[in-house]
Length: 168
Image (cartoon, rainbow, N blue to C red):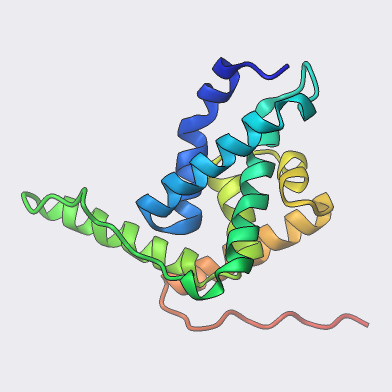
């Protein structure tokens, strides 16, 4: 049985991932709430002794994909720089860097963005990320590589990264 404490321990990670996925605090909170509601309603499906982290991230991934499919027009990214403090130049530069990263992440295809966030931000293993997203580990590695390359290009100001080469 899944304990409330085990679920509660994962809420900060779920919020961070949801915020990175949605780019909007309110939408992220709604996504976390929908995830927790679904997890608690289906807690009997959780394998006793299992790790709740990948299970909860899988639920969040599925909820997010369903929301995107049902409301494709709602896919706007709202950048929120509430935390920027006008007191210092460093904070302004940090805020701009965060904004640039958020914008670059928003430009990634959803498949690459999810993998980059799960591996890079949430530090999930490739195997756990593969379970969350529902693809083979090799696909995770491929999406991660392409996503990181594209992010570098977007952050450095390049419009497009080099196309993949066909190997015969």
